[in-house]
Image (tube, rainbow, N blue to C red; front, side, top):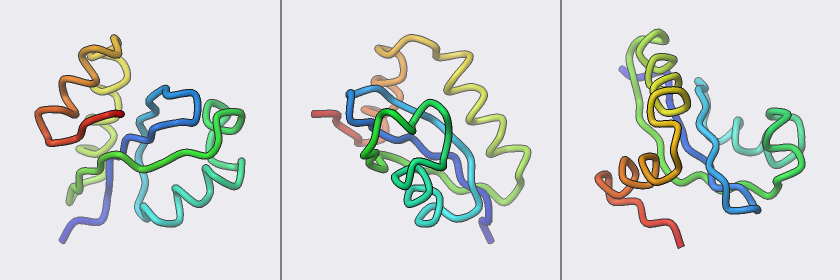
Length: 89
């Protein structure tokens, strides 16, 4: 049973934001209310592009770290998303 999620948002300025949550619907609503993260607050509205579920919190946090710190470049992040069927328009 998966209770932890890594997610990627597309912000209004076309930037990508990766995060972790236990409730995707609530978290996206929180971001769009301007209370989610400093990064997304001025870049609203945000749209959920992708999510992965994990049974372990540590795994979800590791995926978030990997997306933000290892991929770093937008081209690599877009390639990751493309491999999973997500096309950014």
